[in-house]
Length: 320
Image 1 (cartoon, rainbow, N blue to C red):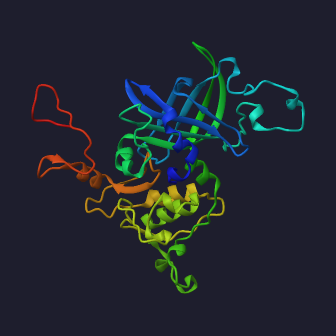
Image 2: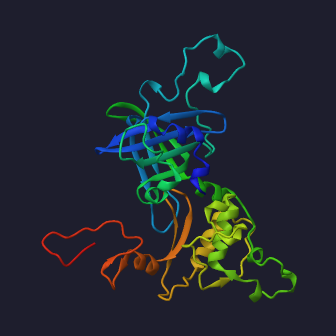
Image 3: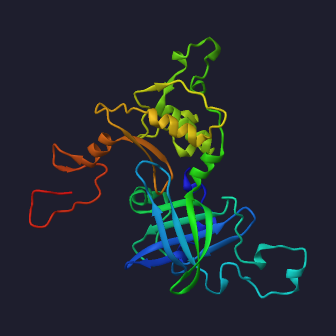
């Protein structure tokens, strides 16, 4: 789902307090734990001992782990000096550190955005005018903490959390009882043959993502009732008649239909279902389309997806 709707105004408004230097480059770095019980804790870059994010081309969902410094039990300890208040019925979160729920609803809001300066007066890096830049160079995502382990490091105690894309968790839990008939509005399915109940696989994937995530912003298309069409989410060349088995979640529906998807590109190759690392918007595009937009053979120049030019030492003929 689109992450700009999930990152709170407080986080966006205080970006100047989240500056960090990584490999001699300036970044806005924000890592915040939060859950529905009202517990929220933000970490400075120095508190993050290790962070690994896996982006596998055959799945759109991110995963990995984060290791947080926990010397002197910093994560769990009292935020304020213990008083008699702790012995009352009040369980106000401001008396304690962060407490995990253990139900995959502890969230990590992670934002890593390169900025040209540490000057607090610079333009807000989250500004919409920076969208194209951020889609290439920035990363932000909402993860669910799925496992917690106490570990020892060279600097002392730490906590290691496994993180999984929140979209993945939601789709794995939610059943939408999808049917291709959902994409045939105004038609009485009782009078249609199975052949006429089919729908394009790409359109099915759009619908499942929108309904499964409860967000039309996951895939902007006419299916959401507006006139904005995602330019890189193809409908495909194949049709399917499908109804969800009773035990299938939205994730099962998504992967089943994705396996049957055939690109509408003339090259007749496979398509990648991907998620933008900044906006959280999904795309479905064939491999040949991606390569065509990366390199224009006719002019021997870079295309829309062309980011940088690397010349192999010792030759002027080959570029990557």
